[in-house]
Image (tube, rainbow, N blue to C red; front, top):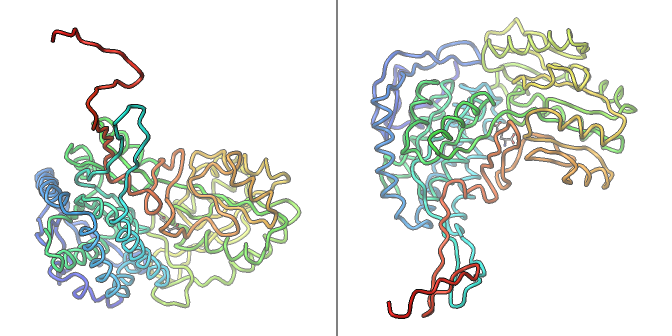
Length: 514
Ligand code: UN1
């Protein structure tokens, strides 16, 4: 196993036996039950054990987050930004060891892990600026001597549920914004990535100490479905922000809605690219390859469906086959390798099952799909399958490096087929024809939350709102005005006159003698 300098990143939380608790409030560790072993996808070896939280510990965490919120919400927003600025400083200092933790736990190539830590730093910088920009509107009122405006106030503890594939950055999108918005944090990370969570938590605690704040602003809870249910059912959690599969999001969203709570969902994608004849094919091949097999096809933005105009189909298939044959797969710490493992044996099995189903449904395997047998860990070669866009298997997201190719003859038809799946996260078109590009971006074009021209479906910057439509859950995180999710809007109408005019011109005159 690689030497990861945990001790430097997890001051006070590091356990020499690699045995961690079930929950952490600040630096306080709570003991839970059981001991779930966590295995690195790189070599199949156990690198940590985590315990599981019960209702009792979860109640303590939520109550402590509620109290921390009450204090924090009255700190002026630009001062709250100062805490996030200090946190970004810690992240910069520990960028490399943090990336190594991601690579150990999630199996991402080190370059991509460094990119993920950078994404976390970027969103912190963004949030610092935002802490002076949490503005509301002043709106014209129909009444004389009145003023109408809106204010944005903090909402309360924010629960952030994250997946294994972006074990730091996606929490960061939520955490940085939630903090400047005046809220406290509870993090339920993927059980696959406990150290990523504890490392970020530890560095946030260091920043809180530097700031002179309350360590209970940040807590971490480990566990699975039962722990998620206990957390999301708790009325003191003001916002549940969940990233993961559509099935998980549907279950969480429904529970939160049942108690009239607020949720922010960033769920599965089944992302497509349309490749037009006028496209720069060299550029397109690079974008397709990064989007389809980067992070071993385990991004929610991964390219899964490629629509190629029929006259360029054979050409693009030949090019992709050549590139796929050269992609080096192996230990993600070795920078020669462009692709690491998939997350576990189940992911290998799911990919193999999807390939089998696709072939049974008329698909033709054009590349990859072989388990790499000379390595410990969960390695598989990225696959390309040519198949009908309506095939049943194509409608679902297989979280693996599996790309489906479809041909098309008319752009309108390709857009229609692209939009025909249940998910609606990311999409792209490659073209040099402005009419094609604008059609794709128009209301008649892509129905996704993200639509790109001449870049791939993955690798979004933090400055834009991130999320998607339909079964992707409708949430928007990270940039633009996503901060509004972490605040409540209060509309204020102020009468500074000496009359009481009613809106809509209603007359309500009381008798003179009262
Ligand atoms: C995810 O896979 O959940 O756009 C997030 C991207 C990254 C974020 C992916 N910036 O691919």
